[in-house]
Image 1 (tube, rainbow, N blue to C red):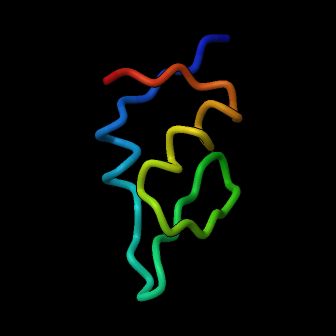
Image 2 (image 1 turned 120 degrees about the horizontal axis):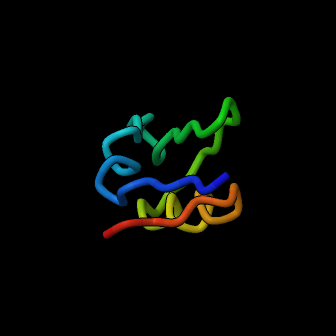
Length: 51
């Protein structure tokens, strides 16, 4: 199965928590400080990122 996501949609799913961002993907939660980390995380989950 091919999984795709737009970079914009990934960024829209971030929730600011005062110390950075909370990012949830496929039921796993990640606390990140740099918004660009969503790309790396999505790629680790097998997503192809569309810009």
